[in-house]
Image 1 (spheres, helix red, strand yellow):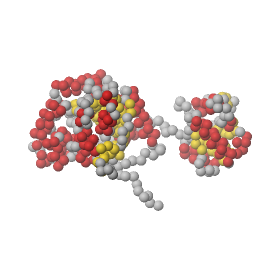
Image 2 (cartoon, one colour):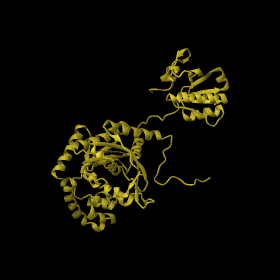
Image 3 (cartoon, one colour):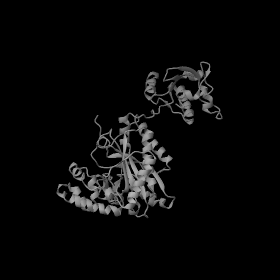
Image 4 (cartoon, rainbow, N blue to C red):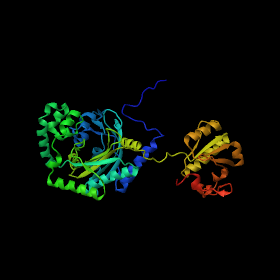
Length: 446
């Protein structure tokens, strides 16, 4: 029978056999961010379209070409978030976080949506880990968020990334740079793509970010922003480099990095991997001192980054980085007969109450079929219970890893006395005359 439909192009299913990898990456990101004082925030998957038009910039590829925008039933223009910063900034303002202690350190795990040509490392629905630091102007903050990103990579065991940094200045010094870019690109105007011809007057820095090979070739000889920085921006950038050096973080200054979103100012950076092809940027970010003001708030210096989780997983796979093993049931109970099934339910409840993972068959299959099922689940231990085992109050506990077996009393698993914990009962079990080590039995601490 043919499927009614398949997954939408550019989306990806994460199956139960693989989801533990995603969970490990996500947990690592949150844990490292927590060590730097960041707290998790969750924002809606869609926002009013004007948030991204104002925040991201209406001259960017994201806004012009890639957003999923629609009118809702009330006639309002709604957009699925293409990135995380604008929504976090809106939440910062709307919920009064600007009145709290600054800086406000925010982190998030979020899904994002962009209509792009799907390829390895680039999906139409993708996931990011992001951090936002609202209310910090010091170059110390710039260096710290870069250090945070690097610690995530180090913790995950990723080694082949290189860091590129740049400063794109403040609005004052960037105005002079815009004039220099206009003068340079105007002589090639007829050779530029239609989009870049439109951008030439409105936002010439976007020409440096064009993906057209012809426009990229023209941009190679364009003026560099570092030659136009004001004294304050130069000093800020030099301090960032000094602090990175103090933390032994290696970097390369790349004057062509401008990032793809209009809200950036001063420091911008990218962590790039060579092992996953063209889509090698796994983390990008920088400072956006004007964004909060652009969205209607008070001038609030801020900065952050976004880290693509799918690309991060690609890099880890390419490098052979290790993941923790997927969790498996501590115990599988194979039950045959009505009394045995009741006992299995009783045992499972008590053990689950104590925090153990316990599974029994829901399809009432034969013992052989149940054992095949237990093997596929990867259960650490199993017990086979029939009505006779219930009557005799004993069963066989089998270690599925090494095949060792032991007779045990079912009373040990189900207590009639609630003052005695299951752990204490299990510690009293004896196998071959020796007291059973509870932690060893269920792999605690392995």
